[in-house]
Length: 361
Image 1 (cartoon, rainbow, N blue to C red):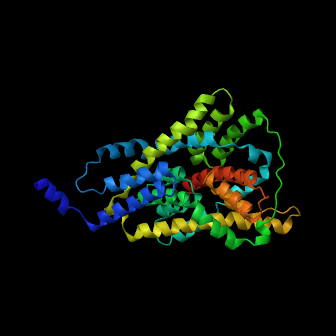
Image 2 (cartoon, one colour):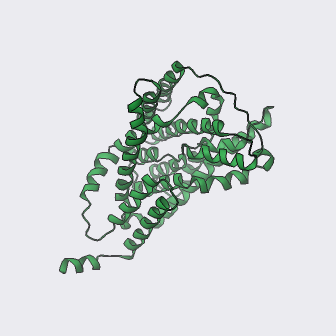
Image 3 (tube, rainbow, N blue to C red):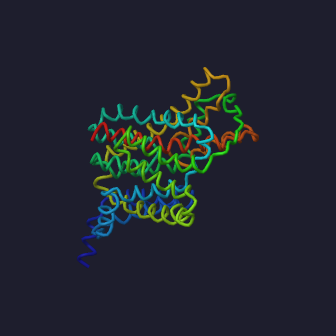
């Protein structure tokens, strides 16, 4: 009875708020089907770590083994790489520039965040705009940010909210005439040799440009090589489904260790969530505005909506652009273009994370 009494007296309103936040994450995962493999364990974990007197040694062990060592994000990148088909990008390499343009929000947010936080924390917060959870974790961890929990929650939450955040931004920045621009897809045969050489060459180039990104890019491209080599089909399927889902579940519940009320509920966390949203919006805007800029000088017009797919939220962002195109014109098929931009954004976001680390480590 004494222990029960102590547990009740140890309960604070902040813990109750974290229970509510955990409940909201579970609701979004189950009812709205927003990244359920991630938000569900994250939500339940947020409740567990905010129970007075709860023993969370197992989560601490998982955190030390999987997050502090960056092992979970890197293994997850193998699964993501195995999911990615670079065919649309290789058929139209020009799409690569949109992935680069959509990283604008990261560096713009870095300048803004540095007004409120130490430079390492500001850099860690800015990378939320990449819409790439594993990269956000690695950057925040390497820069020893004390806001790792808030950064992880913001990064993954905004990834899940892509269908809600991106459409209004895209509509605000484009006219109906621009959204109606058709882009016929000219399918080109991409040889197996090209598909195999591409991830190897990208790894080498990224390693030279941003050496600190080599592990992120390397694991991503390793996963893609498993997919494309043609002799590891069963391993590729395992990486795409079993491995990716399992690591995502472990990642979600482990991230929750940094959602304890004492370190999570404060004004800094709210500011980080706001800056993360700012970065996310401006990354989307950067891609759209860059496409509009190209249209000023190009005879063959580009539907500027595809620029928004340059963020790293694969394949959600590409699909959203495609659906928006169909809504404006049922005969306007933008999927291959938007997915090509989307996979280029995956590469660009990892390189951007490496550049951030090169600047501030």
